[in-house]
Amino acid sequence: MTEVLLLGRRATREIVRYPEATIPTLFIPLFFLIVNIGQVSKTFPSTTPFLNGQGYVAFQLPVSLMFAVATATSGLALVTEIDLGYFDKLLVAPIHRSSIIFGRLTADLVRGIASSTLVLLVGIALGARIETGVAGAIVIVMLAAGFGVAYAGFGLLVALKTRNVQATQSSFLLFFPLLFLTPNFVPFDRLSPLMETLARINPVSYVIVGMRGLIIDGWNFGQIAVAVLVIVGLGAILTGLSLRVIATYDR
Amino acid sequence: MLETGEHTHETHITTTDHNSDAAIAARSLRRTFKGGIEAVRDIDLTVWSGEVFGFLGPNGAGKTTTVRMLCTLLPPTAGSAMVAGLDVVADAAEVRRRIGVALQEIGLDPVQTGRELLELQCGLYGVTGERARTRTQELLELVGLTEAADRRTKTYSGGMKRRLDLASALVHAPEVLFLDEPTTGLDPASRLTIWDEVRRINAGGATVFLTTQYLEEADKLCDRLAIIDDGQIVAEGTPEQLKAEMGHDVVSVSVQAGDVAATEAALTGLTGLERVVVEPDGLALYVADGPGSIAEIVRLLEREQIGLGPISVSRPSLDDVFLKATGRRLEGQEQPGQATEVSQ
Image (cartoon, rainbow over all chains, first blue to last red; front, top):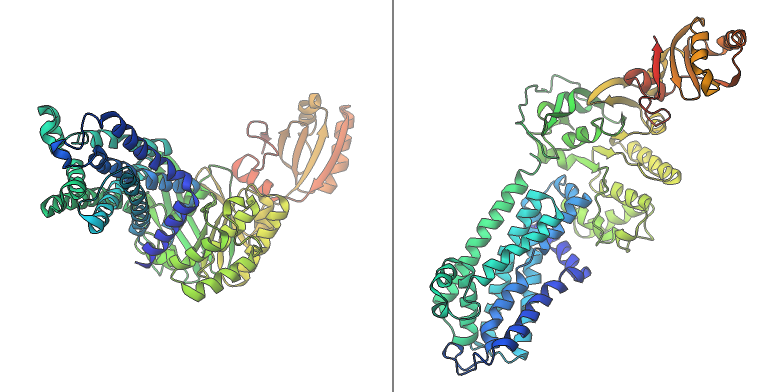
């Protein structure tokens, strides 16, 4: 545990000292938030049934939150470390190899909380109202940060498997279909049949729905539970694979 | 590079196979990479406790692969190795507690300061809190980095990075210290500083396994050394033993480039001549008695009317040992292909 905390503190320090790695990951979600609202807010006024009296910003906010936290930053930091040779120094230290992964994920949790809080505050400044109040806002931030941690496992996996900076950077592109094959612009029932089917089998949809419910509709513990299950399941698979790869790295 | 093949552990070392004073003992150690590249081919190696042991060889000879196997970073394809009395495969975790490692690629995190890096390294070896801070300060003083301690390591010069990397390998006072080409790329002054630190660490009781491609480094620093070439150990002993085994002097004769072939022919019958190596601007003559042969060399060349340039006699160097063992020189004094052995 001490190893994880030590390596987590170091990785978090890296985020603070290297803001160039985090700022671009915030630019895209905020850009999409503002552009999407500007383009469709007249199409979906606050009288639209699924907005429950709110502006379209409330509907789009979860999508931007997902964008803000799903990054390949940890994977990139890891592959850079492999490139520089510091990774070997960690491998030769008498620590569990898993602590290298969990240390990185600790920093992802910190980054996820900070990024999603910022995006949420921007959303509120643009007119979104959190129906479930401060407690709901905290749950939204934790869901977003949790998803960021779960998704970070993918970047770590690509970094360990390829040991290649470009490949790790490109791994972020996979998130686009995952994010856009969801009820990101309209609810499930407004999608075409094919898109609805794809959105319903995409687990990312349920994290968006869970957060959206907390913003627009109020407490729905069933939706929150499904979102948590998706996050835990995704995290277990991707982190599990990363742990397996690091355990057999060069062996 | 990706590895291939299962670790077959065909040869095992038991505690009775080797003296208990051995800090490192490798038997038939082999590493084959993907594509069948045999980086290390069945090497046997014993390093005694308290020694500075040099592992000398050119780039690509198998030095780093050997170090990575001994440090538990890379499993052997076959054979076995014990470090600090423990098997590097079966007891890898315990081996790591007892060794310090500074690899060829300096493993520093550029975002951290020198002090932060050492304190983290202390923590990873179980030294925490006030003990970690004290140990960090000791190490910073040891490697002369107290003034730069609170600067990020990306601002350090190559020599400073090397010294910090060395310090980070010492946080837990390791029994065996592996240094993979610790002075490669350093200026002469930084190199001397590293040598002093290695001597000091060794005087403190640590066994040092040092790879190098510098003959002078091996000669000055190492109690014993092995020469590795093409994945195999081709010579082993103390620097003095290895040089003494050469049993001859080297007479370097400079002539006009166009006269080299004629000079070679003229000196074929030189008394005590063991070997001739043709170099671009002359010949290296391996003779039993260097000073005694000079007069004869001058006479033979005068008879053939060959103009003689500078002539010098030297005792055998490690480079000569390397040349004898591998058929080529190590440090670029003579590139492969330029030197041609003409007689034995």
